[in-house]
Image 1 (tube, rainbow, N blue to C red):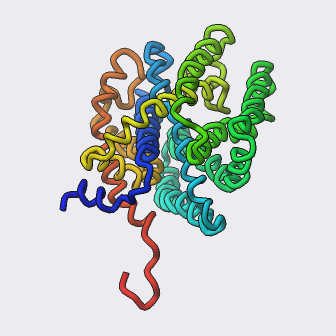
Image 2 (image 1 turned 135 degrees about the vertical axis):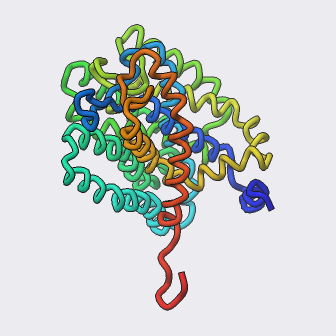
Image 3 (image 1 turned 180 degrees about the vertical axis):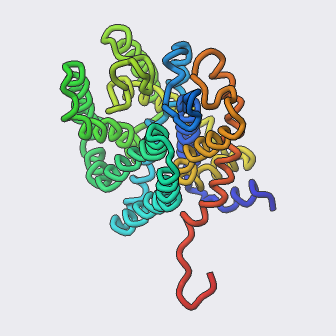
Length: 372
């Protein structure tokens, strides 16, 4: 049997494939977004000395691309949906399984990169390069911390949605508004952790509402225009950065912590999903369409944890060939076009990493006395 047919046969009838498609789109957006904006620039005098840069600073015309590739709202929507379905059974076993699924891939990543990072330090790698490597590997993991907090709080959040419906979003939105105001006043540091959790709890609660049948297709007719109008007003009238991700020189980022612009973008993306959900469900009944979605869902944590490693491995290899367009050069001029040509190389490297490490992240340790 082909892989597509086997995956089709193994998929439970009651599984909502459209939510799996949202998760697949979200992970793809995060990976591509990081690969496209994470420019590593080599010092011409010292090729091993790197610093980070962003192509968005020299190419502001690319900012609309961030509205498509910044898909964290969809990530948390899928997470909330999955939590609402999972906690209908026993909470503690479900929570333990969730924590294990999050912790094991991170543990494998650390087991590989901590010794590698120490080796880089031991051989005299410049401190700037060590900082860039550490930042690329560690910074994306903030997402998992927020996701874990929301997972632990899932029963409380689901009870809030059950009792108050979508009105339960208002206190969370109020926290984000207060954080934005304090940030404009230059006093946002105190509110950053709270605003980060509250901001991403909004799409998480929408995912719970989707699972409970409260969030329907009709809501998409409101979320899309409201999200677009709010986002435009925040940028044009209130002076928010137009980019959905941080850009050097903007002063502050719409993601650190999530601003009202980030919530407006999430609302618009979720609204588009609700409007297309029925048609998407029909497409996903085809084994050939369902196969890549299923494969990406089965490897989602592996892909998330190792995608920046793929970028780093290709970049380290690039040192052997000298300066290459789109790699280790300033992200100006035609750099974005050359970076597009590197995406298949990053993807193949990521596929090799996933093939190597996924079994260590998902398999259970062998029982003593039995063959593994």
